Image (cartoon, rainbow, N blue to C red; front, side):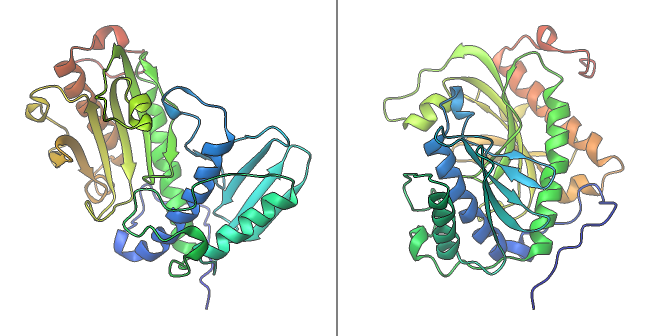
Length: 312
């Protein structure tokens, strides 16, 4: 029997969302997102640091934002009614229900929906950076979709997005939008210095552009094989020497090794039981930012906005 999501009038700040409770749904939804994300990559005008590619959070789910030219269109996930919606600037709309679909059937229905609107796309139809790289058109194994868990995912995404928006407003540094990356399934905001970073010749085009300037990034993910639980994170790239020696707040936060670098990590489970969960996460992001900025030599006083906490 299909579980029906119930959207109540109140939602607790940072409700529980253990990875184990929805890992099969997450794996399916991640691939749905990658299919739509690859269409966004194919159809959107290029932006610096690939800011054109991620999704943005909406009042009902996530959106690609408008793209294409003939016609202009957008693709939205509605995580309240659990539908995929393609809206065209001509006023035409095509949508279909998400529960019960495999990745293969989602892929087929989306391409048919686009074709019915006269939209042609060209993507590489395989998952990006996932252990199972079964082509989308052949993937009938990933077919789990629990509406209750998906609605919870969107609610948490919305809450964390607002915390990141508040954190972003504390700095005059060039700052990215708060956006949802479909390839890694995380939510992030990034501050940039004006220092050019010379990438090695072996760097791929995505990395070369994304990290063409020095960055300090703050974000959140829902857990994966390497970190099997939801967590808030921050990193500085390139990583300055001694970063992992800098203090983090709250006391539960820690530096962890990640692909040869150091990641500041605060478990979602620790943040959600704090006396002030929102303030705790903001304090964590602030401590990680100041750690990276201090070691990298950023002028944090000059970059502070009136909304930033006093320097200590």
